[in-house]
Amino acid sequence: MWINMRGYIEKILAECSEQLTCYQAPGKKDLFTIVKESALDEGKKQKFHMIIAKLLYLAKRARPDILTVVSFLCTRVKEPTTDDQRKLLHLLGYLSHTKE
Image 1 (tube, rainbow, N blue to C red):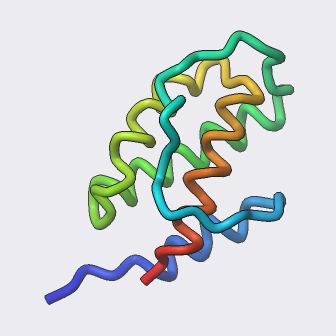
Image 2 (cartoon, helix red, strand yellow):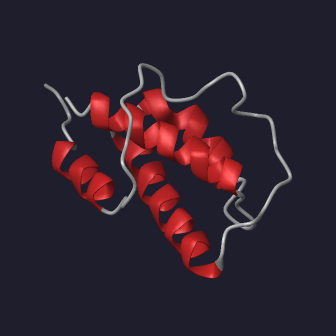
Image 3 (cartoon, helix red, strand yellow):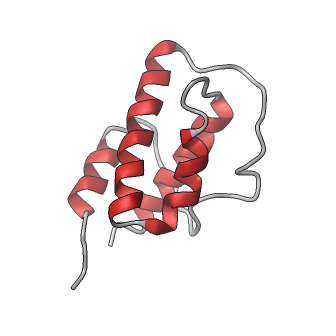
């Protein structure tokens, strides 16, 4: 028996307005590097937090392959930066490549 959350993944990806690039891995080597650069504006912070919460649900239920990246990004929801946004987009690109 397979647990499939493809529809849920597609809804998350639909909320992302940026063009996504497909990736072969959920994160890059610099995942745990925290870059102090410009913080996101309030609207983008809320969207970042909302998407991370949905990804945490997905990771705990059906996609343990993304759990490390999502766990790290959960620590960044209070003050996300543009670098954290880039890491989230990388993860979303991986999800778009591996929906099945």
